[in-house]
Length: 140
Image 1 (cartoon, one colour):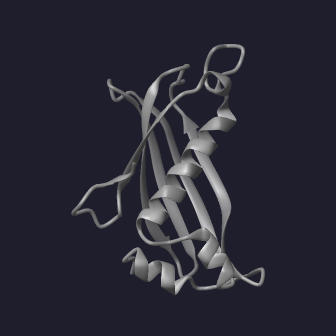
Image 2 (image 1 turned 45 degrees about the horizontal axis):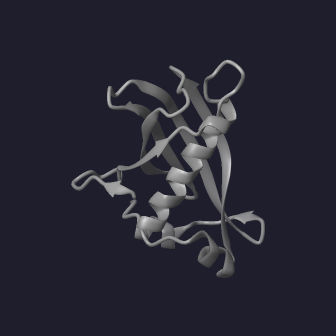
């Protein structure tokens, strides 16, 4: 379940996970691609918690598309590790949203991943101002 931290202008949220065996490679650590799955799931849950539904947006003609992913891998997770993904969102220009996300291991708080995921809203394949989304997220 997502927990939103009150009183923060950047809309900080957190979501807990546990590493599943099949997410690990032969070295016994989480395969690098799985971190993107964790980050994406946390972003989707965060937006849902703010009243933003991808399927509803799509039905209304707006799609949110990732345009850039930057990830710094700091320390590996292993099978059965518990961790939290913390996400903040900010507006970048008139059409871009950026999620700043970090993964921390539980219970020691070890910093695992630092990421920035940038996206744009499109209508009929062309960039558009996502004013409804900015409004729902209270981004100015």
